[in-house]
Image 1 (cartoon, rainbow over the protein chains, first blue to last red):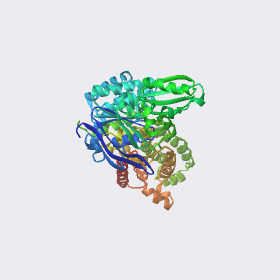
Image 2: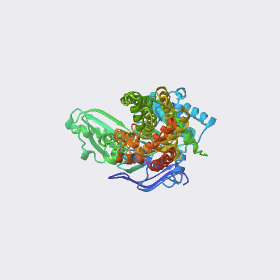
Image 3: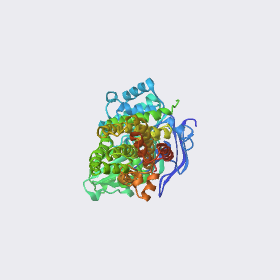
Image 4: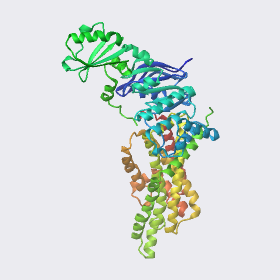
Length: 326
Length: 266
């Protein structure tokens, strides 16, 4: 398998009447942080569940370090650490006991296990809470403890399913910090899913954008953003009648344009600095009064919009959470 | 990494015992409830059967394997506490499903059957301790109990416990929510209790009920435990333990089979 530690070929997963994962293929390089980005219900968790041997694919192949996840799940399980989307800690046990049980299940014991537990707790800065019952932990502490637990048996790949969902900004930053240092200090490959664009952009070396069970784009955050164009300009007018795109007059100057809320329009252009004077000129000639102008580099949200015609945020609200099978 | 599979077995025992020690409310179900049965039901009913007339009382005792009603009930309730406790503990795999711990064990390389057996054995040990507490109180209110029979009675109790926690796990593997839990308790636990000789002897049951009692594993546990604690029983204790072993083994096999198949689709 060479440089690729995860390799997925034509993967399909069908639940009764829904196709959750629709013929996806991708490869993850050893040592990189690879992210699946997409709205809820896009098939990200289903994909991860197949890779971690909890679900069997309807068709297609998935290999972890060259091992088929369907043929030899036990071998795969030894190589992976998983942080699930929903907490999986034992709330009635202490942080130390949770890690101890995990370690024993993975065949560790004695002094070695004790040392690793302490080191793992140190890593996520929970050492002083080692003997506290997990029930009393905050969401952020739990997530950190789960990361520590997933790393305890020194896996080659760490799977993170929506690692910061439901966390406050401070805890999110902490989790990001640990994820970054896991890769740097331990050289672990990280495969994660997220529906937060900023998270994918901040953490991932490469991203696969997923929607309705399909991968619709793949690349580094920069590569993805360059698909859209270079810059996004937002202009605000004093009158909603004037907030129209004037596509005919701007033909050749802008890549695309659409009206957005609050008397504003959003323009996608190649180089904002160069084309802004021209745009101003066109609007002024039509008698439009421009109240405000801002421009910025595109975010992954624009990428998603460009690819699907929907905003990632919108689709979060539109698509209901898939029925919980647990 | 050299995986020592038995580790998973031991550590699941450790986990179940630890959890029990932390979740003290479970003591209420497994210790207080049987005590309520013995005191409120047993003493009330016992008085109904007490006529202060040696002839009548002798005749009535004959209906209950030759025991006081309170002693008869008490030995049954010891088995009942194990039965209810082990069934609940098996079904509580659902909690692990809902709170995710099960997934954590399912992605681990440890053999699933060892995780399952470790769980069942851990819970059984906890239930043995509970049963001993109930039994201790029994010695205060009945003078027909034989302390020397305790170890063998507990052996029967242990086999019963493993059998029913496995059955609970097998059922829980197929269930996806807690909603069905209450129904399950009413539909399985209640009938099995009544048709087992806990409250009244099997040979005094109507014919059709005896047939059910004879395929109910709980019947043989109740009878065997009663034999070792009092020297009186409806069946031969050797038959009791043989049938108990067979029925428990079957439920372990079913449990392992359904647990091994458990993915998160079900």
